[in-house]
Image (spheres, one colour):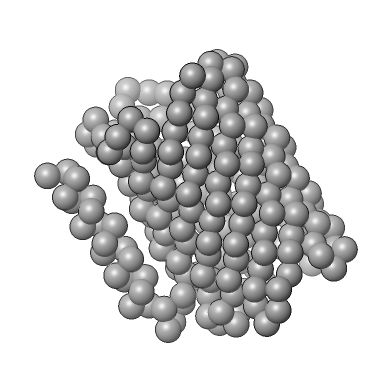
Length: 210
């Protein structure tokens, strides 16, 4: 029964997202591969995003690699990400980042705090620095399903500082030892966009442990 409920939620999210395409067109999907050892974790992901139609049917393709070293409930990570953006023409972006995260475990629930600093380089030779702070709360519903809430803020300093906010909710369904599916909804605000953006998405994860 829980699996059926989750499948209905996933299908409903995609149905609502599709029905809203003429208004918002915010659909994100990604495939994540994760390999974990007692001390290190390597994560690679590929994603495709159909973004808001009010900014000319923007499309984004991305690939990202992160290597993290864990110690107790803390971890330090280094990563690289490549983005291709399509609006009226193609543009590219490279990101180098360093991050720190702290996990707080409680009975049947946990809270994760992540701090990330990104160096972003664009194909027109612009370079910016962006700071990201994210808090994520997860609550176990069954042995296979968790509810997730998260809040994230982005800050890009400069003469016209850019501030972005994301508020997300979703489910984490571990339907197999190796496989996880995460349907989610995100409400996003950007200081340079005069309206909120609604994002429906699904993430598929493949996890291996040594």
